Amino acid sequence: MYTVVTWSPSTTKKQDKENRKLFRHGEELTIFLMNIEAFSTKKGLAIAQKFLLAHQCLMAIDESTTIKSPTASRTKNVLKLRDHAKYRRILTGSPVTKSPLDLYTQCYFLDPYYLDFSSYYTFKNRYAMMVDRNVGSHSFKLVTGYIRLDELNSKLENFSYRVLKEDCLDLPDKVYMKRSVPLSPEQLKAYVEMKKHALTELEGSQTTAASALAQMIRLHQITCGHLATDDGEVRPLKNNRISELLNILEEVDGKLLFGRYTVMILKKLQTYFQKNMERTVWRLSLVILLIAIAKILLLASKIEKALYDFLWAIQEPEGMVSLLLLVTLLCITVTAMI
Image (cartoon, rainbow, N blue to C red):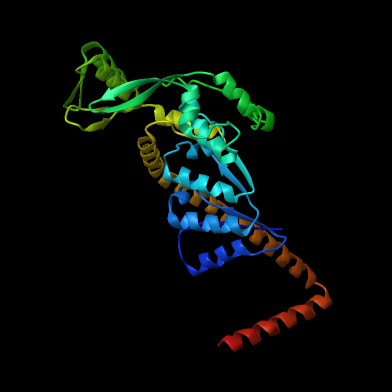
């Protein structure tokens, strides 16, 4: 059995009740989840320290590159707490984001002796090439490269474990597919004019390109189905991209990610679905009507069969008695209604 409590900076009675679970002692495992930004606050730091002092804890930092900067306040606070945790772990998919120097505070959190450097600056002097630079009255050391990386890698191998995605996930290979979408006549006209003359006109508004880079941007805009005029107005162009996108939606299952022009694409999809909503509602109403008619015909068929069986039954003497009883009941019912 275990208890999971998620950190929240709110001071409601409900949250206070949840926080009290953190300090119960027993055989039950207690898991306390905090976002890394909470360690930048006094309240988050205080409750984390109180929790660590109350238990023999394993403290784990997910996405440990969030503590790579030795001057950041949250990094300093996390390193203060490390001494209160009996066990420490870090997890990340990319321990080095900008430079090998990112490793120092991540490894220091685990154990200061893993890299065997007493400070960040001695670590930096060992593995970075630096030159002196002066800006006005200030001087500083500029990192120009890195050295002894083989030595650093060998140290990391002694206390780190790497798992590749293909070793733990059974995922199919990525499939990249290019789709060619033909330009509409309006797009083609604007594209040819912009490419040849570095200008085009759309509904009385002119768009020009003063440089080769601006011309490339305009050509890209045209192929995407819109164009910014010299007046700053964005004009839509008739294009086939939405219809192709709808074809893709019909072919795939699950989620779809848009890389660029997300807002514009969603607006166009919204307009498309609004135009087709009335047609969809009409079709749905027709289906409901047909279902209702089918049910009525089925009920009529059952009534017809029951009536036929009844008329056949009253031909016998016992059936006449049943008919008289039925008529009597109907008369009583009608009288009561009146």
